[in-house]
Length: 472
Image (cartoon, rainbow, N blue to C red; front, side, top):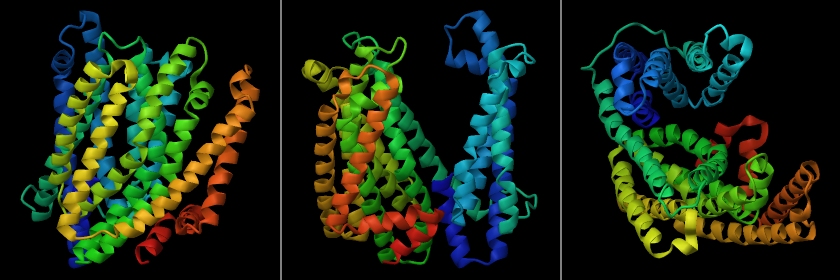
């Protein structure tokens, strides 16, 4: 929704009257409400058919329960979809706090409905959890309405399939939907190869956990910055400010790389301790730690490029081009399959359960390379010399930090510690020491990103810091 709505909304904000802007926003809001309402009703009415289509070999009792759960859950489709519209409008005004925090309400409702005194009233735990998802989705939507009203939205009823703005959004959404589909196909590809008969037991779970740890770092910063820069880039494109767009992109890549490169090094060096601290409990034993650490190692190699791709894609979205990222992703998908087949056939003993992770990382590098070449050909040089100079400093600082981590692990005899609490204490001490070493070396090298990062995280002034960086 952000990819399709924000560039058009930015055009209205910069080149149309305030009345025209809100008329467009209202029409998108109510048109989406109508479409989502139809989808929700159809999903509820034909719930049994939907479940059978996704699970044709399931048992009769599970089909009945699945249909009931599906019928309870489908209203969440409406509210999550409308939340996406509200988020896109607020992001267009550079408001990110409430949209970013709103999913917490979904989690809170889910946890509340999982409690015994609640789910007993539903007669079945699964039904209570389904109701919790819907309740959370409703809360997530309604918490954003007051801010929309304060910005000037009046929710004047009126949908339109002929409105030029609505049609522009629709045209941009179609490729974006296929892009999401390719993402899920990539996940399916990894799942299929992870369940190959030669893979050790637990490979699928190890890949899932390794990806989650990597995504935690990616989502904590790279995705947040990508979300924040899209409205600004869309306004720059609408104003014809291509040099400003280049500055925005270069600034974002430098600042995000300043975090993700050392994070990747830290994940590689500390992969086993991280997995042990988080998961080595109960039936998750030494073999599980080994499998997950291997998967995390290969995923970590791709962390910087995953982050860079999250930043370059909004540049295309800001130019109202959602097709190019999908085409590049489709090529990368084919490459992902080819890499998996080749590694499984020729290098299984070397990479083992890390094969799907390594294939995904190599495909990500290919995807980013294609997008960078296309964007550079379209708008010219992107200030690569400054980015390379910054990355060189970051790489050296990260290498020093990684060496310190490695030395600290052995000096502390981390792997000989059995008790959880002492092990956690040593781990946190190593993490703090590594952070101090990295920022110390970065300061010694006079990395500009250190000051820019401080501006972003201090006092919650995320948008102001970005604006400061964008204007140089």
